[in-house]
Image (tube, rainbow, N blue to C red; front, side, top):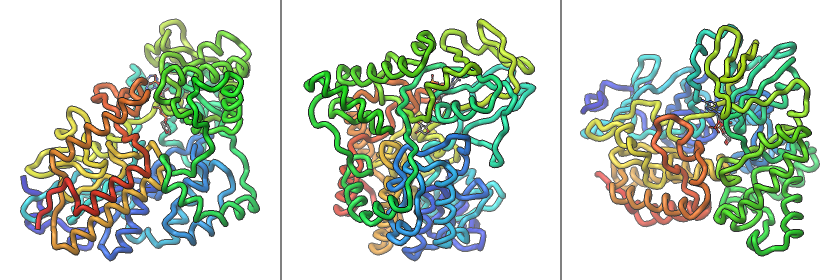
Length: 545
Ligand code: NA7
């Protein structure tokens, strides 16, 4: 196989061979562009949307909010940026995060290097020239020495295969592509399919507007209150004055956030009273850290069951109708093994007279017929259908590009039995191609801003090192990739995470190979591994002069 880069026919829009093509202008891509350009490389960033922000640009549904504290879910690379951007809520809403990312793009003059409204449709590598050729949706081609894929872990929406959906008479909205101008559901009858984080965040807002709302639930999820407190300017200033320490702790942590005080004793060894007191405290504190209260909560099923039962008790307290409360109560998988959700009033929403829970595991949706939703047991007349049905996570964005590496082998072929990488950043057979937050990396298991900075810093340092040492290509060896994959699997198998069928392992996508995709050995530990590999002259890599 020979990409046209070999002949020198493929060029960047301005004609020259670039140093780096960055794909995606979300959190990771913006930083990659800034860092690589700052290192003196000629960089072009390609973004399919007409604005920066990635997942925070597209997921504009009402109630969308981050489950990591704003002070942490922000870039650490610029102390000035850190001080000048004033967060107004403890957990930022989608509009505030998007405003922040737009500010970052403008403040660091990133837009001039971004091709908006353009998709990279294919990438092919030429062995002879060691160049990648990108084909763009505009028809243009661009050649570069390196490619950095910052395509997002949750960027390819899953649309359910419901017969008749394309002929539905009413409005269809996806949480993953919400109209920028918003949607007015006043006086409308709506059904929402999906009760993951997106559905659970949106449902209370939709219920407040709609005349009638049917929640189509296939699997109940565990949800913890989000506690969306305001962050006053004084609180922000006090916290910002401590930013250096906050970041130091985050970079040394397992999840890229400053550690909270958790209990260091087994959930099975503390008294019932002490355990319940801690569960209560963390419930009222809110947020996803609920699954980290006890050290064995994600390793011992018995310990985990105690946390799960606590949440089920809360559901029974919050939901008036015991039958509805029972249907909303997750059973059969460990709490936290599917990503824990955070909500604002989700369970109480089911006390509203206009909200109806439909358990589609018992009465599946057969079809959509005109303006009707037909389940096995009833017909529901609706004006709008909201799909909150999730993503082809982690690998979907990479596989959405026709990537051909050495000898024309496609990434789809390389990952046919399940995705494998070396350190989450590189794949054997694909020299000079870097994955930000690829499978086998920490990615969604830690705060994505710092995780992205960690990966991009490593990639940028690697590219400069190759230049300084006269190498034109770097490629993960098959054996290094194999042992890393085994290590990733081993670490996961020591936890309860693989016990749930979730997007973490691809189980939500029909036909996708099931494999737990993240490295859960911890963010700081992963950083040390990356550092050692670099310090050892890129151990596990084949270098070409
Ligand atoms: P999730 O967490 O994958 O949730 C998707 C929901 O949609 C979940 O309840 C699914 O049920 C449901 N779903 C998916 N496909 C179908 C079909 N075909 N029929 C019925 N129900 C379906 O996606 P989210 O967008 O909510 O959240 C993703 C991440 O974004 C989240 O974890 C945070 O990190 C941010 P299932 O559980 O598969 O039975």
